[in-house]
Image (tube, rainbow over all chains, first blue to last red; front, side, top):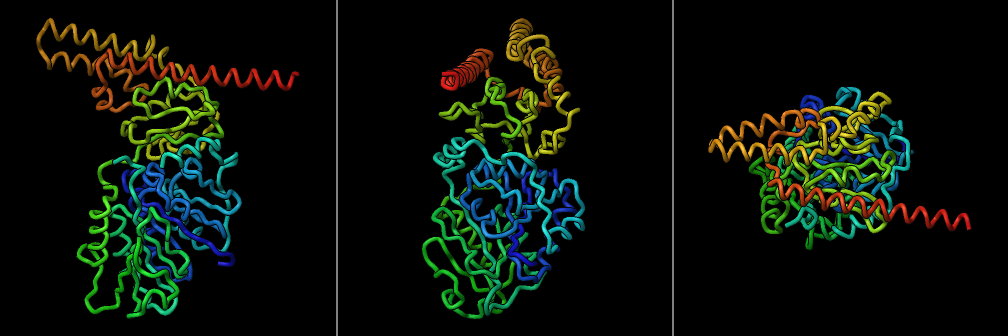
Length: 137
Length: 300
């Protein structure tokens, strides 16, 4: 990959809404990748948000592109935003394991190019909402 | 211990520098095992990727071939970081591996969150759509929503939410409330189409669908069931009646039966509904005042 790119995979551990065959195939293919890329698998992105997991800040790439294999882009966008770590719409691509095939997703994740697809809009929760969430943590 | 008081644990597979990479099968075993325990795992070749924040415990694993972490450019052990060198003969991966043991030990010692006790089910607000109308706050009986000092609706108590219940999203006129683990769109986060919006708007006034205030309906039906119960002295019949009466509400709002059956007493429902409505009204009033003041400033 040209520019530094990180990959984030969500295992959606607590629900069966993501087809097992898709999420297992994506994880298997990532494990077979020897390329010099950093990638990260989380057990459940929703749970991290609910716990205000400090690791959420580390998931977002501040210095490069980010490709996410999870669920619907609108949901992923607002999960991050509600945690005070809005995704960069110009440097983030979200693959939807609920609707796309494992093949399509792997092609997107390992491609040198990025196709940003964070839904349009502010992408930011009102500042005070985030500040209070962080204050409660 | 509340959800947010817990600490995080992350396993880092370091394969940079002079380490020997794991085989794909070994990686697969490692990732599956850690994920199944409810924790995250990262594969990296960059020493800077090892988390060093105070709320995250890191277990850094790899085939270090006997080298000290510092010589590989990694932060030294101690504090919240533990290293496991997989170079040794017989250091297998999987359920009986040193990684699983380390994760289990840290989870116990540091009282980390037990991932199996709560399914992360809670509303996520799309603030690009939300108009801050407070209908969700008025509707929810379980204190999931609250308002910020700036009178902005927010999700305050994620773990108060009733698993698999998407009812508040059904009362949102803008389809701004998502439950990412819900089965269907747009509640699951799928894009909102015009037809979705029309459909959601039709559902806004759930009370009109049900012929009156939703909690009033619940109260009346519970009272009727209670009355029948006292006359018939038959708990099974009363229970059946209550279930029957609530079928329509359950169907219209897709509320799981167990949520309806676990509703508190009619008096308690009334109290909570009044409290939620008062909060919502106060926030709306404050917002109106703010708008008026802002309008006056601009006008003046």
